[in-house]
Length: 55
Image (cartoon, rainbow, N blue to C red; front, top):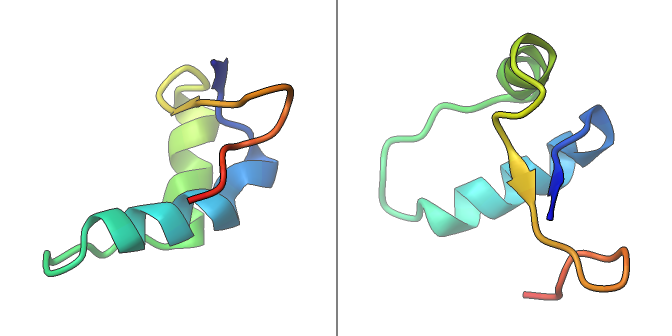
C-alpha cells in the first residue's frame, strides 16, 4: 500500500469511472490533482511487487 501520486491521476480516473458505473461521477484530472496536492494521504494505491494489480 502506498499513497497516490500525481503520476497516478490517469489510472485513478479510469478506475473510478469503471467502479462508479451508473453513478453521476464528475471527477476530472484537475480535481484529482488538487486532492492529492491538498491531502497527499487521501488516496491509497494497492500494489504487488511495485505494480498495481491488473483488473
